Every structure is written in structure tokens, then in C-alpha cells.
Length: 147
Image 1 (cartoon, rainbow, N blue to C red):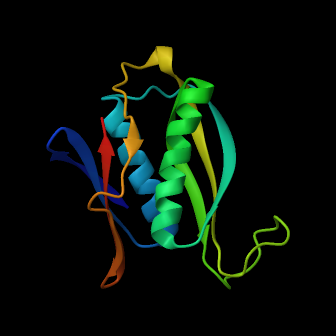
Image 2 (image 1 turned 30 degrees about the vertical axis):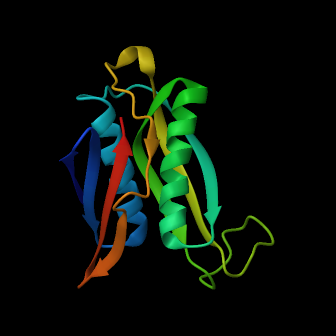
């Protein structure tokens, strides 16, 4: 899995590829952390959360939006992302009844205290130019963040 930061007018974009959809989501989230701080120390405690949405793109958007929310509420920079994406009809994640057309994500991140990093504020994830698609034998994503 890889990601690259891309300049985007007054914003910043993350372009990522990975072998699996779960790894792709984690790579984009790692790109969000890299866009937020030039270096990320190894400190911080892991936290977990779940996100659900009606489609893949909406799930990616809501996942990244949740990371920004967690940053603001916990006062941490989410880093070292791990996630599992489950599409409609791909099985139960153990969370109980859910919409059969729903995409779900179970994620965790290491919360690095904001006072331990020189962080640039990423205000929001945008749908502007968002791409999420299968390209040959890998997944590709392009996401623009408002700074």
C-alpha cells in the first residue's frame, strides 16, 4: 500500500493505491496524517470505532471525516491506521443487525497527542475530485482535503 501527497490549489490531496480496499482506506488515512504533520512520534494509545455508509465512496468520506472529528474531540493526531471494510452481503462483522445494502468499516488508529506534533490543520475532507476505483489488480483513491 502506498500514498503520495499532491498539491491541489489551496488544498492538499492524497493519492493512494493498495491490493485491497481495506488497505486502501488505511493508506488514504495515513496520507491524511502525513498531510497533517511532517513527522509523527511513536507515542499514543490506540482507539477503535466503526463507520457505516450506503456506498464505497460515502464510506471513505465518512471514515476520513470521522478521523478529523476524533482529532478534534480527543486532541490527538490519528496515525498508524488499521481498518477492515465489509461490503453489502460480505458477512456480519459481529455488530448485530444492519442494512444489507450498507458498507461497513471497523477501524483503529493510534492517537498521538497534538502537543507532541507540529500539526497543520486539515479542516475537512471533500468530495471534490474524489476517485475510488479498481484499476487492474489494485485499488486506487484520490481524495482532496480542505486546509
